[in-house]
Amino acid sequence: MSDTTFAPVAAPAPIPLGEILPWAIFGGLLMLIVLYFVGTEEGAMALFNGMYVHEFVHDGRHLLGFPCH
Image (cartoon, rainbow, N blue to C red; front, side, top):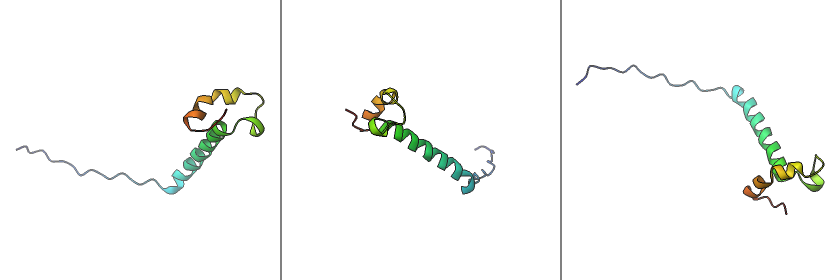
């Protein structure tokens, strides 16, 4: 037998909702912007002229199941 004793481990303090909420809103908006560019940045809904954004996210569109042609 050993004479080693373990000190009690302190439980992590919970993060208040007020500190998480701004980051959650920021992350949600960022995800919506990415979803817009991957899903609908083409044709009549395009914010940018040309097909540059469409071609940049083309493989991502197919990976996520968005039809584009």
